[in-house]
Image (cartoon, rainbow, N blue to C red; front, side, top):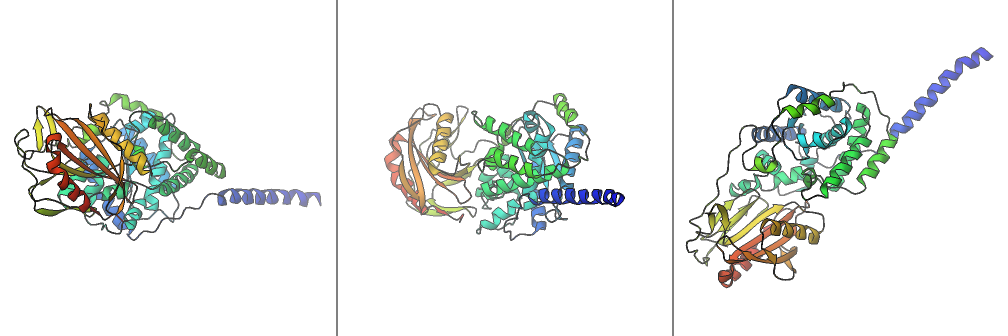
Length: 472
């Protein structure tokens, strides 16, 4: 009967639409959290303590329109998160920071910080929200403590300071000198390419459910990549390596997703314009020097061992064992003193480190530390690290061909440099590099005036041969 046919058509159409929509949603990539031996509550405790440290050091923005917008946007993303990943223990917060670098990061358990530089670089609301969705995904998938799970020699312990130090750029050296877990901040905050791809895809899915086009996330990554071709790559890239084909696979994922109804009003333009009424954005370099923090920071005085310019004693024939937290151990002459700086630890003899004519001078000794790797290639990362040293020390140059070495039973590269010191002496610097399991670059650096090079040669060899890395 015609009337019966008219009655059945809408129900058939509804079923077809529901079936089609279900197929679209089912086609999205399934994201499985990595293995993790820690509890969500431990994530929360780490994030809570580290966030408190970050708030003391960072120039936090308190403008109501900016903070209100960021909170609303963040909460809309949390509401759109998969319920099986959104642990009730998590403590979310969304904090704007008056820093010029293009960066945002989320700590374990929920605290998120977004730099003013990220807003300045964004052309649309979706670009900022996309990065926030990406960072939220790291929290939901618990990538930080998953990293620590892979680092079997590390214990969670009291490491919030190490996390904050890795973010702020001033804590690693202190962690070494205090015997705590050097580099754990890097383990928790530097993600693998696999984790980055997971966060990209889950972030795209969360964006779509929250009513944002995931293609905006791809566009923001394009902007960040363009910026990375400049002299100072965006800070965000230091802990978020590009997995490759990032824009392509995000756009492919976006094509599988249904964009939902947006629950928040449009306050992005107002928030973005409010920055013009704030004090000028500071830089991470100023934060590291204690000049940019919300709590004023604590300026760091130039470390000093004796008086630079006075005679430096020869290395002792007696050695002592020193440890860089749980990352490494090394044997150094017993008359050398360990001194931490922003990213490493130096072991120096008397009168070899201190201020001289307004400069911080390091004339004799060794330095061990961790730096960002330019890529997974030891050759490329070493070249980038050496080039950064050369740029920071005008007149220094590579003095010989690079050679292969072994550092703690793994492949390394030795690079010899020569230059003029602040004391107007010819200075010889040896740079020895290898890759850590988490993709960071570990380096061992030797410094000595040319006229003392023979005296120190055997000592430098012995120190280098004694290095034992414990990151695996």
